[in-house]
Image (tube, rainbow over the protein chains, first blue to last red):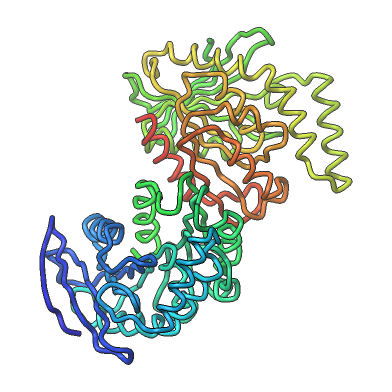
Length: 247
Length: 247
């Protein structure tokens, strides 16, 4: 892992890194408390489709998780996102998705195809990131959490089903399409966010994904509003959830 | 309002009272911080069917709301419950409800009939209790909250629709049957609890009641488990919800 830049804001240190891996370098970012020396729980944040590792929602939550919870937080650009090159298969699926939505189709089926395509790569990438980041003294080998909405949920579920180091997750804004079996393999505590008036994910599909989760300890938080309109108080709740399960 | 006994436990003062009213005396209980002198927000707690003002769930939550939130909390025996006499119409509906459930019927329709019968009386009773309790210096005229599950939700909804002094409510464990119009008239912030495997309230009925609430600010918390098995962390959440909206 190679650090390429370092900055600091309001007590939160931000380091951009690249991690060489099978499919080319993974561009990532690590946030820790400025004065961090000892080990602490790590939260991975998976961004949404079309976003990147420093999208405003990721950045704002990462800062709160570090500043208020004392966590380390890592985010990476998903394949075909942010600073990463695009592959032909992704371009084809993304083109179909845009055309389908322009024609008034729901994105569920094509989004599931896209997440499936990316997840073949991202599970192993996140696993490599956990290993690399936990070698730093100020992170260390401790419990890991995962936060991901929408595409971040679609890529998080296969990771959670495969990776025992992750002990708790905040997921949501996604339907069950193509994910029922994977979701059944998730057994860690999950806080699942659903937007009651989601314009991209049909309500019944989102409820069915919550239902499909294999976790004995799972809790659904549903709020009025469209896909991206999660109320700010849910960030407080995510923070408490991670503190409860990783702290 | 006449106080008939006073006790104290872990910093929480408990006073049993009776309030003379149209339909006979209302037996109630008021909890406040032991050292309370100044005004504070008031939370009303409506118990479930067959329970009473000091049922274990009411008592435990009331103590936490007072000790950790500094609130005043009041509970009363609903008509035909606790120390109150039973009327013939209630006996008839309760008998039908028991017989129906013994025969394997869901309780939705008959529970709605029972709540409708009781609510004709309880809305005015709670309004009288708010007025009486707020005359005490250590409560005072401030914002009021309402907490009620199951029958406590069925009797709370018509109260919330009618009573502008109540500014926020935690409700749940009930279906929409007979309540859609009343729920649409509720406009204050609501945190709504639903048990995902509720053995008395069909999941779709509970989701439909959340959907029917007129409140722009409403949030649904669903957890695995049967009717009475709300996880303890939801009491933390209720406390934060009331602090956010009444504090």
